[in-house]
View (cartoon, rainbow, N blue to C red):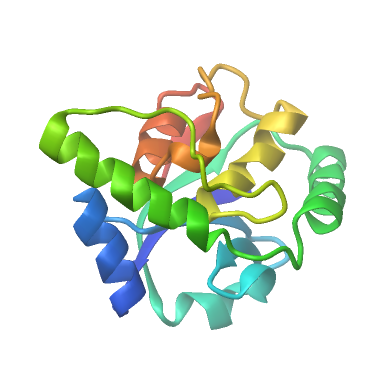
Length: 167
């Protein structure tokens, strides 16, 4: 499994990068052997073929997950399909993050809980919960709320792990 951190040349992606001040706007789970990606976007959590998905995206960073075998990958697929597939994108959580990011810049104010996040909807970074739940990446100090983390913050967090390798 490879974790992709991407950007796209769309207004939505540009707005995310403008608010965060970061070079990436999206997080994707990629399985090279099957050429499948899982991600959450405006249409919600979906599965796509890598070749179709990547046409509009630029990969900025990628991390290979080192400690996942075939059995764990199978469990992971089932988990993500049962729990996440088809769920809506959490646009309200994203809007709350934008407000908090502006407050952080203007007032140096930090907020740890996303008050507008819905349990039944997901931003792209929240899909890392599936990895967290299986314990595939162990040596990470996971934040309490993955609905308050940007794709770049997620990359920085996971890149410190001995269970991943930047490629």
